[in-house]
Image (cartoon, rainbow, N blue to C red; front, top):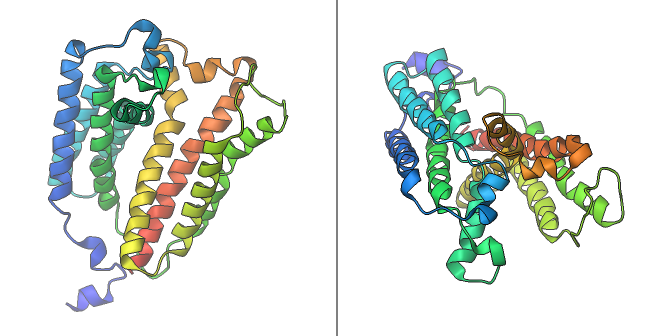
Length: 303
């Protein structure tokens, strides 16, 4: 008992992991593998409406199978050795492959909303069900896998409060994409795609306000436990969304190297392809720093 009291690590940090997360992860891996195997028999969109192929995130089926295998390996290794290098490496591979297999799920859900509600949206009401079911399954498996990996990480001393600066970095990164869109809307021509038919950046305004507000709230925290729990859940969700969107060109270029088409997000900028890296890279970086900020905010409430 004395050893626990004198240890710099809190009891909460070394508690045994819940069995719920591995069960959810296992269910997710089986769903990812199943959707990859049945993909050839699912209905496909016509070539002119196949947005997943056009945007370069029609991921090969073997990526989903590899993600499921890496996830299963993570559970097996972690059961035998809860901490250490082996479970961390297996888990990192599973996270990358699941993120790759789920790339584009945000756009699938966006289109699925219009399909379900029947709101007239033209082509945006069409859903690539053949690929969408696999991307949704991979995204669903990604969540418990990420939470398991957060618990697998070596416990840290609670003598010092978690840093708040990652939240400030996230707030700054949340300004990049909306700022560029406002610059182009106001007449700026530097690195602007031609043609550029977009009007006032309404969605980008919401992203700007929401991203900055979320980051600052994660840094400050909320007094109510219930509200703070909702804030943490929002942080994890937005982290997944921004990472998923930000990594689209990278996974699209990998798919292109494997024989797929050039991603439309890259081709749209023609000679200013570096701007694609800046814009989407800001999303990916925002996701990374939101993960850190969300975890730090959660650790502060557990002290």
